[in-house]
Amino acid sequence: MARIVALIPARSGSKGVPNKNVRRLGGHSVLKWSIAACLKSMYIEKTIVSTDSEEYASLAKSFGADVPFLRPAEISTDHSTDFEFIDHSLNWLEENDELPEYLVHIRPTTPFRNPKLIDQAIVLFVNHVSATALRSVHLMSESSYKTFEISGDGRLKRVGSKGKALDTANNARQSFPNTFIANGYVDILSVCYIRKSGLIHGDSVIPFVTPVADEIDTEDDFQRLEHRLALNPEIASLVFN
Image (cartoon, rainbow, N blue to C red; front, side, top):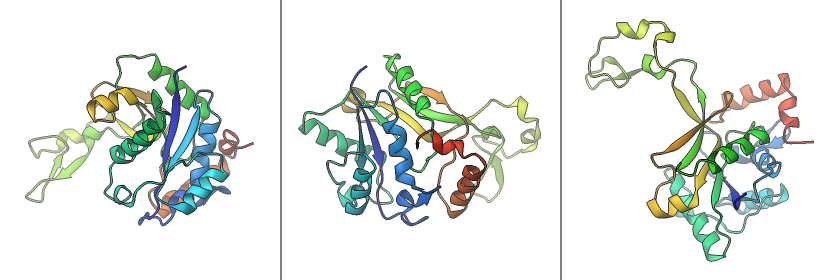
């Protein structure tokens, strides 16, 4: 297997849910859930956390991750892009002769994972040499073709439609194509492609369909995930034992 490094972004300063990356969920920090899943992988050689916080860095190290650098403040804002922290990380790795062939991008805000699925995603991508990236997605409960946007004159219109007639949106969901949403469960990135193109994903992305994955963006999300964990304690046993 090629050299594979997991990269977990964990900036401080979240405004929607303060300190959500290190908030405890089921007795473990949200960040620890993602680190633990990576450490269970058969193929991930090293797990690196990219953070701008000394406190987060110390916690990440205590959970078993590497934090060989701190992310600069100018690329750790609410408007910073994924490309910026990934490029910064790759620059450090290259300068230190540790550049991998693949990055496993793991977002801590999707905490519940099965490490075996991470490994399945890695194998799938490594075996597709023409692919530019792999992204995890899950099936949307309602096709996005049935959703709406608000036009410039304040009227509803179907997403992607030029007209404003809505009646066909009432058709049975089975009559619309399935649509999928990226969920942050696991993305696999080609370092060679990123370096050549200046893009993360590109135009030949493999879908990796997972079970519905819950993401944390609000306080309600935390309560929902705590409830799910209480009903299904085996979720924790996948990464903690």
